[in-house]
Image 1 (cartoon, helix red, strand yellow):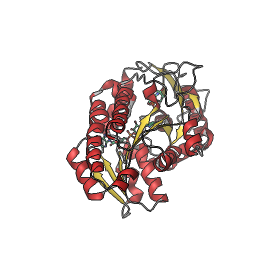
Image 2 (tube, rainbow, N blue to C red):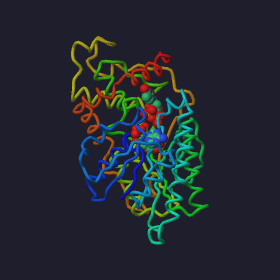
Image 3 (cartoon, rainbow, N blue to C red):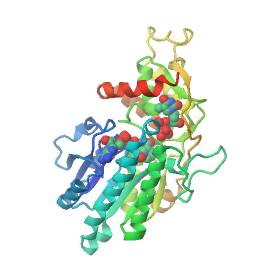
Image 4 (cartoon, protein in one colour):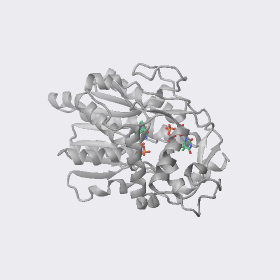
Length: 363
Ligand code: NAD
Ligand code: TYD
């Protein structure tokens, strides 16, 4: 079996759902269920004997040691993290606690478990750490995309805390021989994405006739990957990756934020045209969701461009994304249209407080 942390979040839940659909191997899921963790994401696994959910913190060494001793996984896949850049700007402490201290405690528990394994199990064991392209910092317009050897230049408390966790993972391989793998992936999008991140926020706001807040000039570039492709990349690295190696994962889909918002609006115009009662909110001439776009104050220290060079994982492990941006974004918008109950359940009191905090100062 495998142990997956952060399994009730966006990518972790997609990973566990895909895993259970494709493999016979049992998954033990560990998640603290912070504001970003949602057991509804795993609802379709209810009653599935090959999925066991445990609520808990990766920083709880005793709990993790107990789980490792009880279930004896052949691999640990670590998704657990505080993941939202804007939240890290408003309050970095949780990021330090989970992404750095939590990862450290997790590594310690795993090292102790791994040290006690028999030689063959020890050699076959893997600790896969899921990280981000944001650790590499920001690229100028014509600079080449981030390769695995690009130097670390994190600019936000989020990316700095992820960078620190990557360094710890690396050190546990070099110092103790722990068979680790690290993946640094670009921006994901797809089902179960928490609606405070760009794409789901725009879909949810547009459908409610609310403004679509674009930070700064909207010309910041991100490299978008459909979440199911990220999950297939992680499975591929887990199977074929060389211990100690880093693999960058990306979809070769660099897009400016404003173009992303336009695409979302255009798809919604096609799939769920704006009702006449809402079309006059900003621009009485327009019946497009684009008329809800509003430019707001920029994010402090906003990275201008991310881009992933994904040639290593393709060359060495044979992985390629299955979706283009056009197919992936259409599936995503359709998923949000088909899953309004999921959205409504997420839009709790806590979520509303966050929206008030993040956007009231940007007007
Ligand atoms: P998310 O915020 O949606 O989910 C994180 C999950 O971790 C939540 O379920 C939360 O409850 C859980 N968690 C938080 N602290 C925990 C702790 N101390 N112990 C146990 N569980 C805890 O994040 P996501 O978008 O699914 O990202 C997952 C991982 O992938 C993160 O490590 C992130 O840095 C990385 N990543 C994300 C993206 C992206 O675009 N979302 C891109 C590249 C890498
Ligand atoms: P986000 O989804 O927070 O991911 P990240 O910061 O990890 O890349 O944001 C993606 C981009 O969208 C980023 O450049 C910030 C921008 N953005 C907006 O313009 N408006 C918004 O309301 C949000 C949430 C993000």
